[in-house]
Amino acid sequence: MIKKVNVNTLKKMKESSEKFSVLTAYDYSTAKYIDEAGIDVILIGDSLAMVALGYETTHSVGVDEMKIFTKAVAKGVNRALVVTDMPFLSYHTDISSAIQNCGEMIKSGANAVKIEGYSDYILSVVKRLTESGIPVMSHLGFTPQFLNTLGGYKIQGKTQESTKKILEQAKELQAAGAFSLVLEMVPEDSAKYITEHLTIPTISCGAGRYCDAQVLVSDDVFGKYSDFTPKFARKYGDMKSLIIDCAKKFDSDVKAGRFPSENEVF
Picture 1 (cartoon, rainbow, N blue to C red):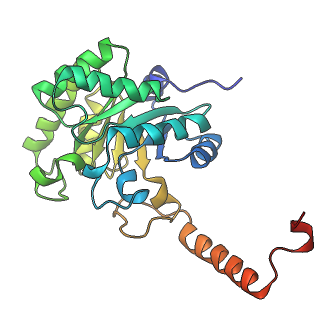
Picture 2: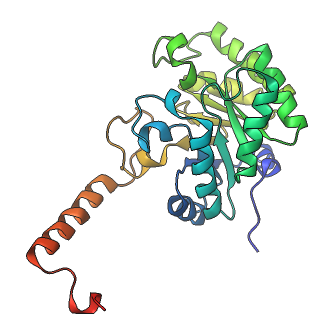
């Protein structure tokens, strides 16, 4: 019987200095395959706004869309911890609606939710969600949902002072109940310092080698999304070329009368 990854699994992995892997997935078959590959955490990232739906930023995706993708991914996963990114303004207005929206993701099959940013209000949301039985993955550093207030895609934690500020925020989120922390676009030394001073695991999204885990967007890893590739993303395949090649062969066979063959008809 397959042993399911849970929040305690990740905590124990940090304690034993064992790294874990995180990839995004947005559909049943991709989730099934990367789960079989041994990925520890599967994130239904709001990055799907761009790579799956063609929006310009993550701001355009909503709760109803995230629920659909969460249901699809959860159906394909047996082992990995399934985490859903809470979309823009889905947890910002009041705690009651935040719990309701996050609860909908759990009902859709997620094991936890991810929430960006830090404020007294966010701390209250994390605390109440945890008390309600909804595990929370926090997210600091560059937070895409705050793109407009941050003034663009800028590295965070570049100074000693700003690094200490991120650590202070992280400790408060940890105390509020967050079970892990994504650090995005943070200098490697800063992320190392933060990681060493937390009891919850940190997940690097362009934050160097010393976090407890690494996360990438699967479409970047597979070479499927080509509109933009972050510096920190590594391309392990070339699905774009594969898809185009397969489509061209199908097109050629159809037009030349080679498809379907005798064995492919009733």
